[in-house]
Amino acid sequence: MRRSGGFYSAPLLALRGLAAFAFVLAALLDFRDTIHLLVWFFSIYVFFDGAYALTVAAGHSPGSTLNRIAIAFKGVIGILAGIVAISLFLQGGSMTTILLTVFVWVALAGVIEGVWVFKMVKNKELLLIVGSGAYLALAVALQFMFAVAPSEGTAVYNWIIIGFSAAFGLGMLIMSWLLRRAMMA
Image (tube, rainbow, N blue to C red; front, side, top):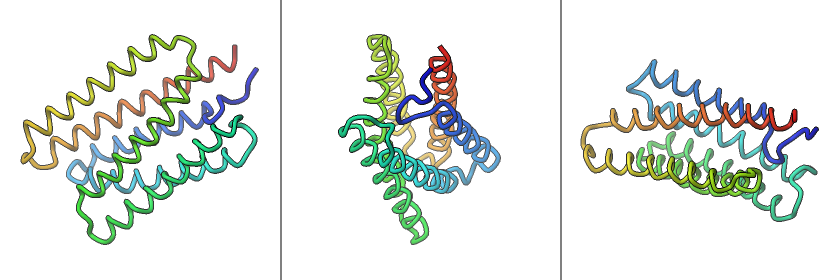
């Protein structure tokens, strides 16, 4: 039985999912402050995710040098993104700039994690179909919302953020369960 899925472990994925659901709950309880909550949750999350990535890269589990470099890169950009987001927020930076920091981190980390998932999954065709379909649906929905309601205030954006966070949390819990099941087999 393998003890780890490489960079990720089942408990880490579950913790990421639970953190996303904690954000969703906090955002629903204080809907008007969703963006500020996002900045704080994001900053704390990426800082610790980055520290974890650097710990893994320094350890013995990632395998090849390329894996270690990718994991270390994810760690560095996570820590930097967390520091930049909090600094911008505390200095009164615009939410657009802060959200761009979030989106840049999501894009870079997503590529690294996507490569990892692609290497780990056996049925790559199904993974590409599901992943591409989900990405396309999210991209179209976001572009539609931005085009239709750019001046509607933050309510539309709050729902997008809450919905994405809930989907992310569910995805992390499902991945945790699947990884745990695969390690038990």
